[in-house]
Length: 492
Image (cartoon, rainbow, N blue to C red; front, side, top):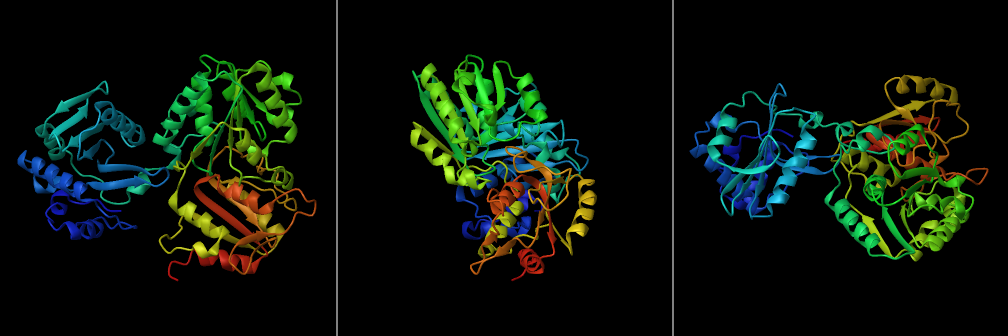
């Protein structure tokens, strides 16, 4: 995406042609349809700035309607100094809304921009009232005037005009309790509007309940189930004794979190053998609950019934990794007993290229030609020994190897169990001839000889852990490799 000259853009008065004109100037990868009220806001803002003495060249360098792909966070107008010394953010509103909402948006925007610069100018322009707001040094919302904004534009200096995506890394703002515990504990994150809404509704339901109460939080990978669950734990632990049950392997990060979260214990579900182990808790939170055993679910239900307490399950019925989990269909049982179901749909971990590749990886009919897939590396290895020799090369570059294929000697690998609820910047995985495409283009996998592992689901678990890049080493499977490389062909 390329920055535009705001004054040039707003000279087009043809509402029907405005979007095409903007798309040409900004060189967007995906066309954007600009609504009429957005066009009017831009024109009136440019008019005010011009009247306040902003010269033509100072209108350069504005990124309009830029979206951070990883989290679908949108900024109306951004201007970034070439030396990263300052950032200008202007939000546009055609109608007046609450002052608190205006302030919260500007403060949240600063959170997403602060890794670029410590000097951020924040403004909101409301056309209905012709009012311009800004944040003062204490981040309080105050009314200002266009001469102040015009002065910033005039004195801004050289600015970034291309490659804005390179300024936003997933590591700068995507928070996972199990991966970045320090950032979580310091509350260096914001919940999405949907997460905040569900949080309020869950807290209200808990406060009005006499128990026993079961609630279910569900959603696909990347929608923030784990983050919301842990955020609820921190919030509710002020008045409750809480146990988080983790349906995977407890890591050092989990122990670290437990040691820094007062009144919260984090335990491994597989260690729960009787309801008495859960008897002292006011609230039980179960992460990746679809992986529980029937015995663990029975213990939870007995403990909740005896204490007349509550339990919140976080689950995704599609994220089962082993045949036994699939047969148990615990997610269905959870939904049956839950008083309310909260389905997260807003992606907060959504690198669009990674998401598109992953979708096509499992279904070739979903192929699109919108992306170059620069975030994907495909490597061919002629045999198992060669593949194993490639692994240190990629792990030395920061890739986390996730592997559940037993034939490969990978002592540094993380298993599917170990990465539940975690994300990594760069992920490395292996595929071999046990994976194949059926006649309809769907990825399939041979059965595990021991009847335990679901290799297709384990592959999905691994690739969905990647935030920024994914590397697949294909071992002695030329037909599979040809199919995968076809995904990356730009022109069909």
